[in-house]
Length: 342
Ligand code: 5AD
Image (tube, rainbow, N blue to C red; front, side, top):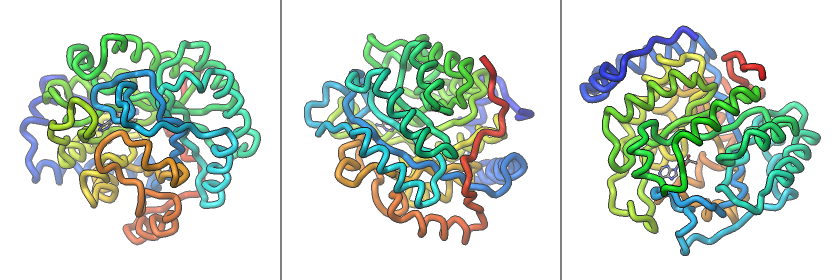
């Protein structure tokens, strides 16, 4: 990992001083760094949105506990396995199980589900994105066959974290989780929202500095988008251009990271997916959630659920990528960063 980094002051100045011309030069360097680390490969991950029940109450999120208008659902293990089978047939070799922090999905249920997927798909990577757990639960998921875990830090500034989350949530606990996951030998993903209420360039500089320290295998960022049933309903959405600029910064800072062009980016910019790749990203996450649930995993207004976002159009997505000069390997697409051993 030979990426360059800047001080917090320098990141702040770079973000505040960004111009379209500077962004273009950044993107050219970011593409070169990505191509050197991973070639022209774009890795696909099948996203399965397991449950939208959540015990947390993050102020920005449409599936927060106190949103009484959310239509709640949870998938059965059989439904999850059917999604994986469908995804496998479409060439996906990573399954990402994401959900709210749903107490119904207790540790033993997740362990059993991971074991079943592992048995059916020994050649696939299993990624969990299921929030905060004690060290021993993460260890049990890992022993059951999970390879990767996504847990965004959301914001590295403690004051800003407190503004976005209820007091029952703690930024220190979240960071402890991330370091626990790493020590357990997971490929770890983290990340943050761009343009969340109250965010400054200084906060973003802290996010970059925190990620440099964590050195995660994967980094997901996307613009904040307001949700109509939250207190942030009237706040402006984060900027696609700033998100792209930060993808470019992240690629130069951590050249071997796997960086998705996220659904949120594609939801605020119709060209977000291809622009994300042109800024240095190298992962896309087609949605494998059954159509009857997709609309209910409603994190923010206007979340893209159809078109090239959906697994049903994966052949078209592949064609578009290949026409743009990318390759879409039939492979797990593991991180090029060595995984820490417990
Ligand atoms: N806008 C953008 N992203 C959001 N997330 C949750 N709510 C929103 C929103 N309103 C993101 C969080 C979370 C991920 C699954 O979705 O960063 O980690």
